[in-house]
Image (cartoon, rainbow, N blue to C red; front, side, top):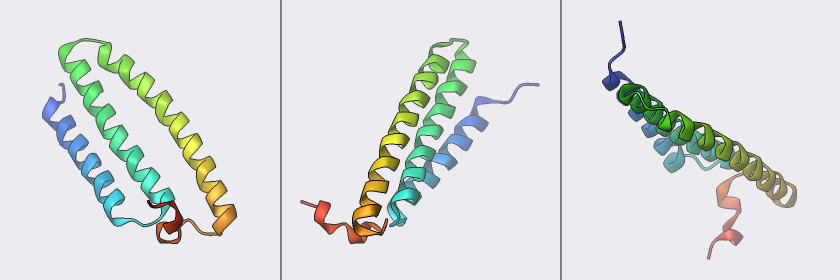
Length: 101
């Protein structure tokens, strides 16, 4: 018994919309980074689902590279957050009006 691709697409949509809501609602930098990771993982679910559905490994290979880029993005993002926290002693976005244009 195989799971239909629509189930994967529904799961991916729910995860992606949760990430979008987290980016739009949250004011904490760490919560926003986690929401961006949710959106990236939702796209990875789509890539793997279609790769399995079409019986092509290209989507799974792309997910492997996307995960390595996402890990690097998290490392750089956390380094920036630590630097900002040391200078302002806060990770709330409203405290960083200096970064706006």
